[in-house]
Image (cartoon, rainbow, N blue to C red; front, side, top):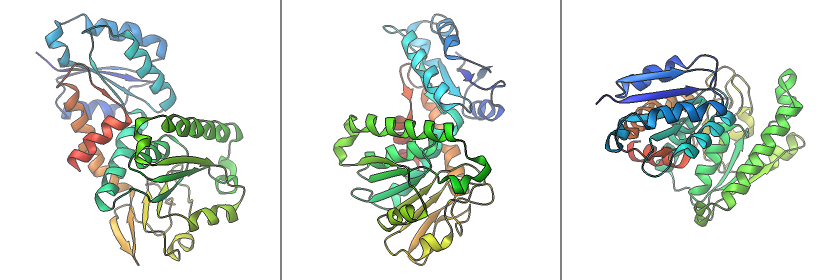
Length: 304
């Protein structure tokens, strides 16, 4: 019985990266569809769940990807609505690599230090930043997510997009507050700093700093973190120069900087591939898995 992965991508062309990694991870056949909308999901998924007997449905799985994370989440929700009784197949959401990337970084951080009770600042309320915030809060961190100052973005500043990301961040914080994971004592707050001075005050209270802004955007100069004795852990998801945190190198794997420890984008990216492949392999072990942020994180903690 061949293992078939149905790749549903919100972009015009289905990601060749995701397709190749799927085949390297044990999928015998990858059926790739690009330009998929939430309204397309029912027919595509229904066509899969009725093709094999119930015991063999674990040999079919769905991967949801693409650059539009919001659409990916809608696609996942639609796929789950298709199922009934034992007629299910496993699903995974990793639009723009958001779940595997955030899960890998925080799993690595959790191996370095106990996150319970620590204070974290996430700069950038985008998909990866918000997922990192949720995972740290679930480990007991007090997390503050902040928007990126318009002055840093310059011509790239988009008022509507800024408001949309803040709204998404606040919705994430509200959802987390009702999640069983909140019993850990972790919290998420979302702020929109008015200026550099307000951001600097927040940095004074921070032990863990996560830079999750757009590619090629410097969010923090070295002077803002190097002289702060309370700031101990730095994570930068940006691989494109200029890097998000000045002075942190892409290959830093908790490299020491005068008592601070930095994790760069390449040191996240390499183990991220192991997590990515392990998740695909796991899809074919059951017919009822849903690999989203928390379940991908559980896999990352097992293998990192």
